[in-house]
Amino acid sequence: MNAADNAEPMLESENRIPGPALWLTAAGFLPFAALSLAAIIAPPDQHFQVRLALNMYGAIILSFLGGIHWGLEMGRQGTVRGAPSLSRLGASVVPALVAWGCLAMPYDYGSAALAGAFGLMLAFDLYCARSGLVPIWYPRLRVPVSLGVMVAILVPGAM
Image (cartoon, rainbow, N blue to C red; front, side, top):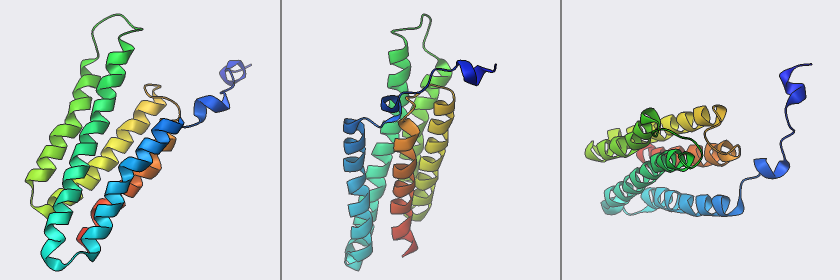
């Protein structure tokens, strides 16, 4: 008999993305899609402004994704004694600092760095999922939207 035999079966409801999380994530992606499309079809004199708005929105959302981990660590304090994890809290503030740095870069470099930061954030989220630090449905939510965000950020620069 191995550990898998003793494991409790996962309830389908535990793996299902909660409706509010799914709908709010989809709504949060809409500005990425709209701004990316607008950056492609806008008159040339408006390209920079629209692309800058896209990066600014991306920086805000990247910061939010880091904040999720701060909230999860604080929530964990309701069930675990001891100080919050310095590494977990530290990792949660890095995305905001990276986002700020991306906005300070020349646009093309900042866009590439921002898209890369979303990829790294996704990798961190997947690590946290394997470690049991986020809900089991979280990767199913984050993978497609993160890939979509990365494409939305990079496509206008490629045009």
